[in-house]
Length: 276
Image (cartoon, rainbow, N blue to C red; front, top):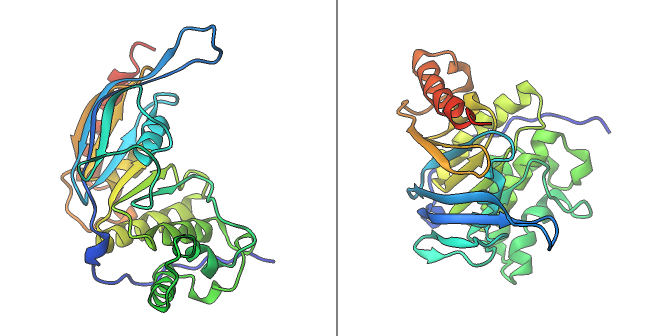
């Protein structure tokens, strides 16, 4: 079946239930060892970072610096060996529906329809009510997939799968949306559409977003704050506020403000890899 690219529709006004929460990473270190006989290797070392509720934070840094490791610890999939991570003032000890995770490859259930993928979380929690079903239909309209509600994931394009993954995360009203290079596998045109779509969704829901990317241009376009990580062991080498008015558009990446912000981020990146 030929895959179709459909642009998302307009978003709604903010929903109070989906307000973001603040995240605090306090002196976090993480070690890995390939075998029991080897000394542990530092993946992250004394990482501290504050993320205010409802803000959009991008993590950038060289490959292997621990960006995804930090994201997985915020998600509760890994535990720090030292330090603490809190979301909304509560220590993160395990994954939870309050933190939605979006990967580079969408983790959808291939045997479920688009609509049933969105409703999987509420159904698993025994909370699939008529009101929740209406909300799922509303989210599908927002992400431009209403006409595909009875389709299956293999019948969708890459961008449509990612929009479905975002809708499935938002149905749980997470306080935090964690995104691990979600647009990295998309072509340039689709990636631009998805960036604009994500900014619209974020403006509507104001969920706290933590977004991992290697792309400085993408980070400056999306973020309120860019946190630059150094080469392994990963540390925070710089935190750069992106004081560019919103709304922002992928069409404005050549503006003087965005070019200047990219220079500031790259200056930290060059310093963070100087010893490699």
